[in-house]
Image (cartoon, rainbow, N blue to C red; front, side, top):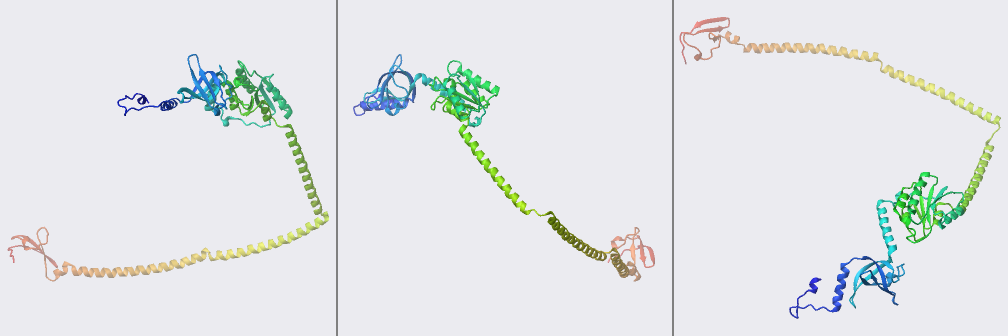
Length: 454
């Protein structure tokens, strides 16, 4: 926006001339976009409320002040009564009232400054403990209206203890009640409350604890918003029910407790059965029990009548038993006879099968086979010898036909040199060489006198 306000006028045609309305509108836009929602603590002054229902006032400190407007739809939700001079904490948007160009704050929320500081402290601790899991439902122990020993942690003189005791006496006077008196407001109260919770867990003399206090402001109930009290409740092995303040009052202790009741009276009602409902239940159970007993008696009587009709005279029963014994004896004899006959038939069958598979018969059969194989072997051997003889004759004849001796008988000779090598070529013979001539019936040793080539 700086360029918007620093244009150099050159000519009248190039000037960007602002109207006041445009200027205020753009300044308002700049302010609203430049600042988020702000928390401001200051003194309220110049308060006015016209017929429209809107609030107009100023917020100031020692050095400055600013105009403020809080419109009717927002101020209807404020619980604080605006008064000049009161310290308040507001949540506001920065803006500009365009018609007059006045810088102002648009208030969205307002509360007393002191209560607001406690509220911020409350929210910070609440978020911290929630992140650590102290409010997780998985950690909470079940609360049922059946506890026999009830412990009350509260002021011994306050209205809360009176309400709790009156409610317990009215609803179920059989319960054992132990009071753990503690201060519920003022310095050191939170330490005492926390230490009493730990002490009750050490003693283990009660089944449930009620942490109770009457109503009051946020500051009055602050001891129940202390971290030490929250951690003591979380560490408790005994279930804890809180009944602190009124319906609209919530404390950190309520979030950590196993069960939160709206008031001390409601806390007592939560952990105790209603005497009248209990008596009605007992009466209902008694009626059901009587009905069941009467029903059982009727059933037993009917069964007795039925059994009495079935009872016979002993002599009659003996006759019936004797008749049954005779029948069973006959059946037994018949069964034995049939069984013996079946076994005999089975033995005959097995004997016949045994004879069929007797080793003597098989031995005779194998002996005949062996004699047959022996005769066949002898015949085969004779045939084989005869075939070998014939084959030998044939081979001898063939060998004789190819023998060199047959060639020599026809007048031929085999010529060898001194070393015994057969001479097949004239080139192997030299003049005066000694040679051997093999004839059919002897050898001739001669000397070569001349070699004639063809």
